[in-house]
Picture: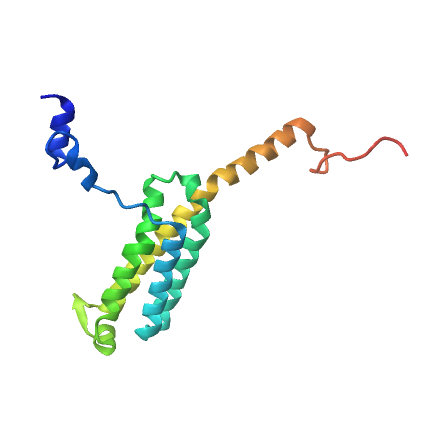
Length: 175
């Protein structure tokens, strides 16, 4: 009994590799999947008559996610930050907004459910956490290019130097 047959049994097969085909890992969400999830949240807000305070926070989060998507490769596609962006768009944000919108509006906005906090207050706190996290991830995604710009500026400064006026000396000699 070899390692291959043992691993096959652990994965639910008969040990001869025959059961391996039944496990299919779903593909990672694409950029279009993520944008579609954000559009669904937007539709939920419109249909659920969400207050402006909620809409503005969701729009901020969605905008940051949208700006971050083209830069996910800068973070590493398998990184915790990339996962957080995808999970926020496809799970965390829809779940938070949906949980709030399933409640009757007046009840959710006026009745304390956690100490002195209403469902609206709890949702706003959750949206603030998501917004701040997405901002940090967006900053991290841009940091590599920003650092490259700084390094290039230092290279140019070392290569060409500055005149006493603080800028490069662009004179070509006596006219």
